[in-house]
Image (cartoon, rainbow, N blue to C red; front, side, top):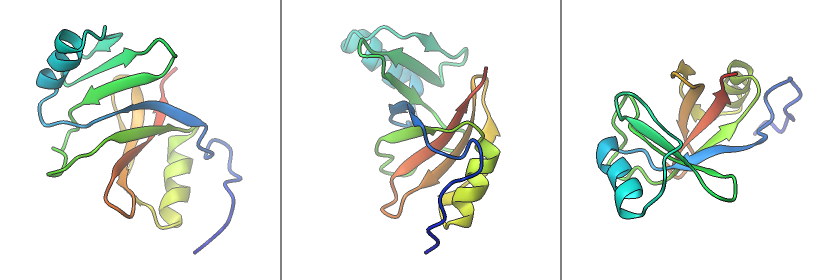
Length: 128
C-alpha cells in the first residue's frame, strides 16, 4: 500500500462538511426530521431531494437522495471536505479508493465512494 502523504494543494481532508443518510425517499426523511423531530431546515432543494439542518453546535446534518438509489443498507454517509475535488479524487483513487468521478450539484462538487466495509462516504467541495 502506498503511504505517500497528500502534498498537492487541496487534497487534504479538512473536516466533515455534512453528515447524514442517503435515502430512496428524501421527502419522507425531510418530513421526519422537520415535522416529527422538530429540526428546522436551513435549506431544502427545489425538488425536495435533499435538505440540510444546521445544528446549534455548528455541525450540518443532511438527508439526500443520490442520483442513483443507494444500496439495500445505505448506512450513514459523511461528506469529507477538501479544497480541490478533482486533485483529491485523483489522489485517493490512485491509492486504491473505491471512488466515483466528481459531479456537480447546485451547491457543491461531490464524488461518492465506499470504504472497505461497504459504508458510503463522499469527497466534497463546497461552491463559493
